[in-house]
Image (cartoon, rainbow, N blue to C red; front, side, top):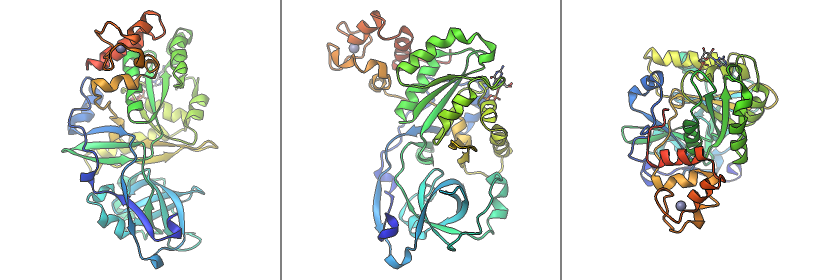
Length: 391
Ligand code: GDP
Ligand code: ZN
């Protein structure tokens, strides 16, 4: 590891990484009006599963002391808060060499990064209790001395990126799963939109978790087939009610030990669910966003919020992720995002079968035989043709 030799690995220059896709990631998907207002900045967020590319940089050996592993919870300008294994939080600076090697300063260390830290003093007694929203405290915190230095960033996977002005930068790294929240009523369930979110999660190499909320407003029995259909695809689906607490323990289990992003249209109950999982969490998420809306200077900064309790886990909060949208998918990519199609695709008559108009199509045959659900096939066609799925 980094503490035993003098090599560190840093990001390649951006221009050697894959360029962001040029097309509009919100294409074919329209959120409701409230969410649409969030999009006014024209910034786009997407998930990307690729391991980011790294290269190795050599440091003078004597400059590396003992290091400890940690995870970046949030950034404050030049500082970042790093959570160590014992859950203490240490305010860190970033080793200069890490900064100068990259062309994009902001991407050097990002929220969610797994890092190695040299602590300023052995026992790090000076651990900071850091529950305050970062954006408000930035001025005050700037004078606080750092207690550690980040000298190494582990390779990233499961990143959420934001594209603006044709540049793409990482908002948060090492996200494990996307919790797709849909209401069973008010607003009514949109199965095709659900399929679309699930496809986006798979595309971003995030594990999809489906949360069907507001179960108190419907007869849940009616929706069991949907839950079962996803279970067959290996995708956990849970019916919840933030109001009655139904399904919340199961949701908590699904969040345990992982970093999760909540997504879904506004009004489906994301904040309420966060509050149900851990009181004050949704509230806190709201407060941070209000600060942003008052136009204070903020670079969009993501935060990992620690879930209390044995299972732990983190919820990702960022204004960007609130508007997590579906990245555009190329038509030929779509079949790969439908796990239920995979067994049939190789059996199609044409190697480049699109499963739309072709005669010798094994996917369509499977639909006729009910091995693939009509709903899933319709979702496929919708995505394939880039039809808006707002319902
Ligand atoms: P968000 O925009 O996705 O964060 O949704 P909110 O958490 O703000 O919830 C939107 C509305 O739905 C609020 O009026 C909530 O009280 C209500 N709501 C949220 N969860 C539930 C639920 O499980 N059952 C019912 N009946 N209402 C809910
Ligand atoms: Zn086919």
